[in-house]
Image (cartoon, rainbow, N blue to C red):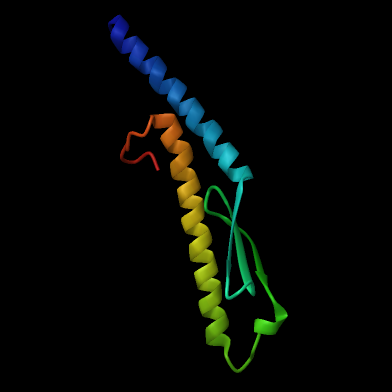
Length: 104
């Protein structure tokens, strides 16, 4: 393998190492989404894992469970969108803005 091929391998290894570091950093970062005027809040880490869900007691109505379900879904989806955005921003820094299929 020529010198150029070895440099390419070293660059790929360096990028892979940095990607692992970013994933670890993302696991420590949090995004929050609140819906329904603050009655439901979902918190996710940067790896899109739901880590907390807060529901205000006043929104718990046994006669209208469907509304609460809708609020929970909306909060989780918004938190997931924010986590994806955070991940994209961090990966963009690594790839210099290039969209590399399969990276994330």
